Length: 307
Image (cartoon, rainbow, N blue to C red):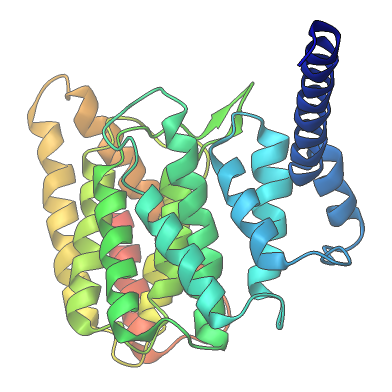
């Protein structure tokens, strides 16, 4: 082959390679919608775009749950996902199971870190899982085994999360404790939630409050109280178990006054418990409560009177 022909062949090959890369880049750009794309979905009442599969878009949105961009993470990714999960006919049972498994796994990613962005993925996965749990109450799809895995993961996450920031001026809501409480509130309404599960949830919430070493200031106590109120609404609610849990709380809180001056961690726990009890009374007072729930409310009021 002559030099001229060889040179032309090299040029043609190079041009083809450039065109191929350009086409790939264009296709990739088309496959990765920007924030404006998601905004348009939200503005269009969360209707799935024509020609698109909700599940594929949901998988992509799930990746944004760890984003430090609060608008992308919270206003768009979470809001769209929660709407699609709860809206009938958008995601089927198998698709919801796949999302549940992925987000449940996210609860362990970076666990033990404090002050890093890894908490965002854990916290907002818990919040999306609360939508999964709400959907399960309306149209069951989890099954007993998967329900138990999710409940166990939620209780463990509540106990193990070290990053208890509520809100950041730059990154927006973090709120791991509140989001996990929302998940537990939905799980506590499930038919498979047993009396032993009630005891486990009380223990986990008590441990979260006791070991927080910070006074929650963004409504976390109220969300935890809502989880217990959901439990108190059950027909099989073990009210004596709740009272025993309250007595232990009272004994621990009263013990802080033995020191003069009291230790800071004891005062923090005391304040969190007081806020929790007030919130629980308010939650149970909404609407008609069962006789057991009313007894639980009276026990909480007596605990408040002793403070």
